[in-house]
Length: 189
Ligand SMILES: [Zn+2]
Image (cartoon, rainbow, N blue to C red):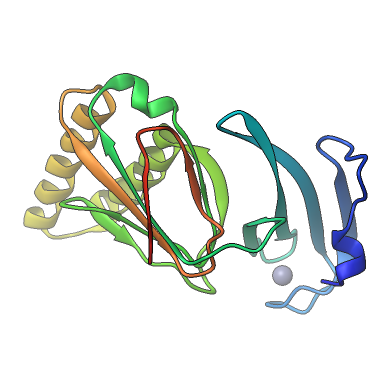
């Protein structure tokens, strides 16, 4: 991405969206990939911070890639968030594709080129985890694995209802991750 494209002057148009259809898909090579670049402002304490959201979707092979990035350079960061009530489900977070998300005793989602970046809420994050566990439950032939997945789903539901505490740790060497909450503890990675 060119620097020129990244500079937007002092008059930011909120939620600018640029769409480039008909691009070559990196997977199936058909020219059916749509690139989308979007500016978003997310609240950060008492100010708003500009972030870029990118996505690439191929209508032929269904390849999808998305990522988020701060408009300003950031340091490698580790963010820890303790969840202990239902209201915490509304906390907004941003996770770049390079970020690893650890939810101890539940899962670790490794970052990397095949991972996606997104902005979501804690609830949205748990819904993603739930989907993955449900998929594991439905696709496994092993009774023991099915049982484990079922217990895990119950645990996730209890957390989402504020009946069980849990911790979310986001580690991002690119620094393009954030948790929008005073409860979040930020340290250098
Ligand atoms: Zn494709």
